[in-house]
Length: 138
Ligand SMILES: [Zn+2]
Ligand SMILES: [Zn+2]
Image (cartoon, rainbow, N blue to C red; front, side, top):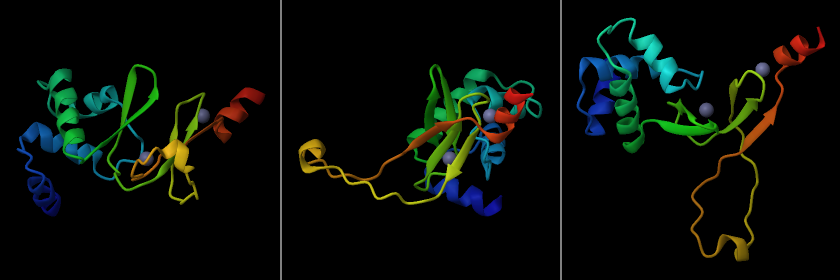
């Protein structure tokens, strides 16, 4: 966490105890939590922390590029502390998100790319996870 603190300082982030608690919760977190999930976890330690503080912190982290925002479900943003390029596999039943670290060869024809300099892509694969599939067949 000490070296991480340095890392976040480099982003020009003011580190309050609340922000550190949020960052600690997100560090290495693979669950792609929503703002509500993060609030529920962190407010156990910081009982005075408001949902607005959590939400505003997430906005700051997103602006600084520390966090990636995922709009998987309408009206519910989810956050990914892993900002390296990767894709997602999404269960439409339980909304579980799984990271896919695989490069897909995707080329955009010139006429569609419209002289854009393409910097990256994000693919969302939808389906039903094995757990939900089993639950359905019971
Ligand atoms: Zn599922
Ligand atoms: Zn991810």
